[in-house]
Amino acid sequence: MQLLIATTNQGKLDEIRTILDGLPIELFTLRSFPAVGEIEETGQTFTENSRIKAEHYAAKTGMLTVADDSGLAIDALDGQPGVQSSRFNGETYEEKFSEIYKQLSKSGGKGSPAQFVCALTLIKREIIFEAKGTVEGVIAAEPQGKAGFGYDPIFYYPPYACTLAELSPEQKIAISHRGQAFRQLRAFLATWQHETHCR
Image (cartoon, rainbow, N blue to C red):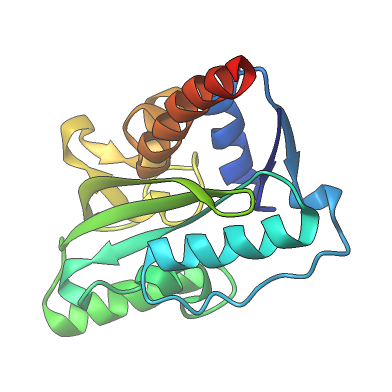
């Protein structure tokens, strides 16, 4: 079986490859299809955006395709940056962090509860499987840690008393939103592949 992981984000790819490791599946990424253009993410939810991306790349490549949309939702900012996480205020994550802390300071929302959310969609000619993962935490007083990527340094995870950027890759995958969603995908693929081959 061949599967296209519809992302060029290296951090995501590393995590997804680790989770799917051991399945008899040949993995491809969008780097194998440089001529396929990006699709505008116009959805209002993570699930809508994952469907938009999966449908686009499956149609363009003809491959079994999984796409995910994920981001950070901060309670004190009414769920921002949410589906705009990757496009929120500035090119660097340092700029994004600065804006978040500025807004939290204005709203009196320091230490706000927050969630990391990941929704994924698996498509060939139609939707085959969808899953969602969520991890609960709070916004750290300041960025901490050098591991992980994206918003990990400002996402404090109380059970481990540190940010996601202070965890090892194995610790993060075990509890993260993406880990939850893609473990569901792994379980589905293992069963679905067996059923497909036995027909």
